[in-house]
Length: 144
Image (cartoon, rainbow, N blue to C red; front, side, top):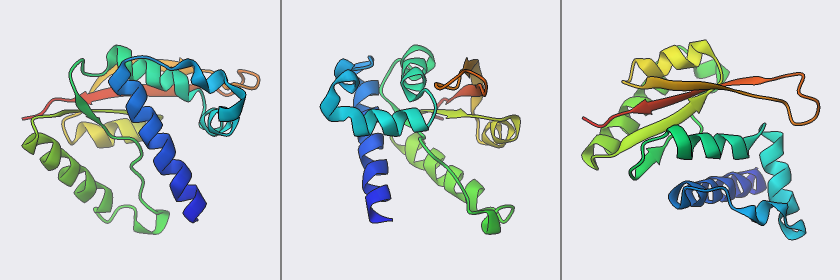
């Protein structure tokens, strides 16, 4: 579990660096970074997601709400809502907008309750054969 956590943190930090730079770096094509590119491709076309954030996310510095999930046994008990209220409060205290992507209507409606607005929906094809596309709903929340 620790290795998975480390990889997740690395992925998040690399993603953050992409967004700050407002571009997708080319180093993912280098052989020595293949494990990271494999990690990205397992999550769909993550580079496309980073490009979408640079294109449709807030132009100024902002929070990227990367992964929000609640264990199935805890769903429907307000845990995710409490987390989103806390994220919103912290972002507002720093006068920061927030950006996220989600893959279905249920999640999109969940985020709308916290002030997120749909900016664009992109279809991201499966990298292997294009047969299982993902609807990527791009959402922004303006700070209050």
